[in-house]
Image (cartoon, rainbow, N blue to C red; front, side, top):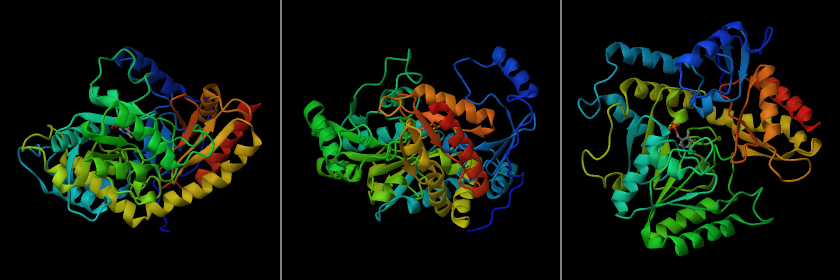
Length: 447
Ligand SMILES: *Cc1c(COP(=O)(O)O)cnc(C)c1O
């Protein structure tokens, strides 16, 4: 594996209390200037980030097991991203691709078409955020099928715009008080092996969902089935084998567009370019964002050319979509993933996580399941020796880790999932150090 050179020393160090005095000052300042609806989970403020380390404004060195929610897979200051961004920004920051086009946009579209599954002609369109990509996939699917219904799943997360709030399952904090939501969105059960009836297969779970679609929506009305191949915010839920292929097949048989929302799981995160690759599933459309541009805001929809092309000229776009600096960053990030074999590293991260955390599943009574793929792993915490979600333990574990200088995020419909999304460039020693802090925190929460 390529040896990665880091700019910052890759060790955890917490001096005094966390947050330190400078962070506390900024938190006070923020209180009178930043809307309180925007919250932060870490009370320490960032000063410098490289590899698996976040240095805060007080000089503490935190281990990053969150990557800014699965974004900085290549690191937050990857050399190839930094170099290409600098080069781009010195020439132009913006022209608007809908006014004066530029090559970077085409290069990113070509690259996404090359990487996305399927050996048919593919095209892409670029946007700014994951929500926008999902929303555009819906527009494209509706234009293509001339149908309206969008099928989504329990525990789904697709974003915070009006359309994507409707598609997102969890009400708090994402939807509470923000309705009315967009119509023609239908939610059906997902495959959630830990909570489904014992022994339910992926095919059976798909039947359960699709029967509901047929009876309550009508197969002929479905424009698209939209699913995260590994659910992110909903709890890092990996569906049972066979579930995704069955959905994909149903879409093909019924003229619906199968959309994989790979915003969180895609772009090497799970140890493959796309999470659907693990089961050889070929979606009609794929949405990407988060990990695609090394931290710069960029998203895209990529898929079958004939579907992508069903929208009239001018029907897709946006002022900033596919910004030239963000495109340069994406080319740098995708190049880094290839050159540093970050797909191999994601797989290695899974091995290390399993090695360090598997003992918790049998040894603490509160870890219902350790699951995930690649560098997208999670612990589902439950009340002692049962299946009842234990959100309080997840909160306590994340807080304890933070106090020790390890950034760990939680998620899940029930708030009881501790999720790990380390940058794929994290060194093994640092990763193990962070995981051992986490393991101790879980033991403490179990007492
Ligand atoms: C984060 C996320 C989104 C929304 O992306 P934003 O960039 O926050 O708008 C959509 N889908 C999935 C699966 C996500 O994880």
